[in-house]
Length: 148
Image (tube, rainbow, N blue to C red; front, side, top):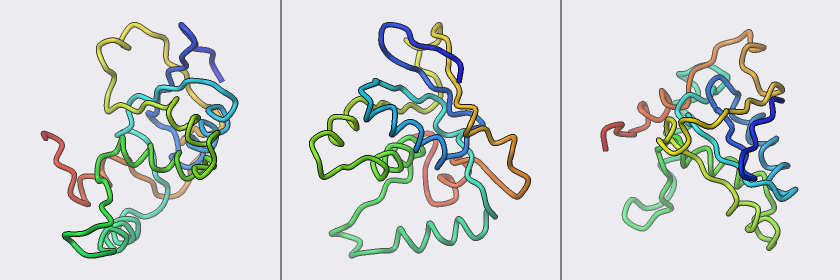
């Protein structure tokens, strides 16, 4: 892991990292008191066949009444946040405090352009031999409108 802590905040580049592995490492760091910003959320990798993952996502999104919820986000940054939330003890105060220390962005915001970006080697998608695709591609297939 490369150090990229400036002013007490770690900035993690999500590009080319596997979603579940990245989120589990970040959840541990959040519980240890770190403040973390994830950039390039739309470039995070999901392993598996696109067709089956999209079908799985569509089935998940159909749960509940259309006008009363539950409502599930289709934006990649919110999907990453929800994945991390599932890995912290959300029902406990320490989990809620840890979750508040997380920020996730699409692309790289202007205020973070000059900061060095950190990567998580254990979550690198270069190890994947099977099919994989980006979270942005999944989000577009399930209804995310990039322009909005």
